[in-house]
Image (cartoon, rainbow, N blue to C red; front, side, top):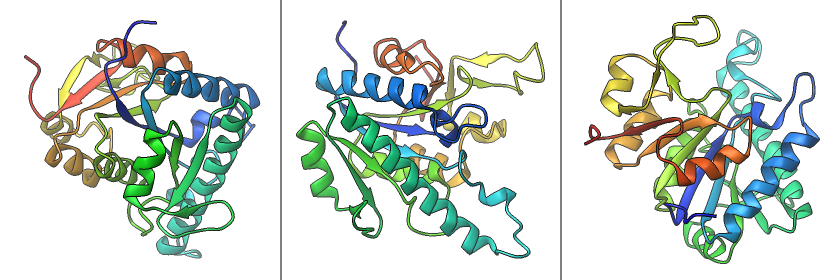
Length: 241
């Protein structure tokens, strides 16, 4: 395998990356993803992961007239812990050490996030799973991913999605949709591309944290994006040279 370009990364996964059709947890997807994550760690790259919860619960689709936004977001945060616990056990089944951190400890599944402890585990070859969002309502898991990436001084944020990058319009609806190879965070905002929420984009831009959006439906793409800067869409604070 050719040398990978980063020493520490934060991988943001949607809940759909763990699911398949009506299966909320796909054995095949979880196994493939865990095998690739273990392979990445074996190369010496440190990996943190933030999971969404779309396979289990979406706050924006809940009946907010009954639940209320705060309750819905809290349920969504709990669902991310469930996803992290499932992924952790799949990683362990592949012989890969893994631990879960949440904003507040949730024994026995997760411990309270402490930056220094997370960094020690990353250096020791663990996949560190950050669940429970930011711990506060009104923030998405994209914001949590940007926040944790900056806190652990990740070299880059990798956002695994179900499409092969960022397009000017929905490629599933428009055959003429154009994929961007590179964007700045200012362009993401100006074009209203919806790659991440405003808070996450602002955090990445202010922290000068580059991001790559790529297709994780084939887990091997994680290895490819670590080796090939042309895969997916790269988003940076400054224009490409």
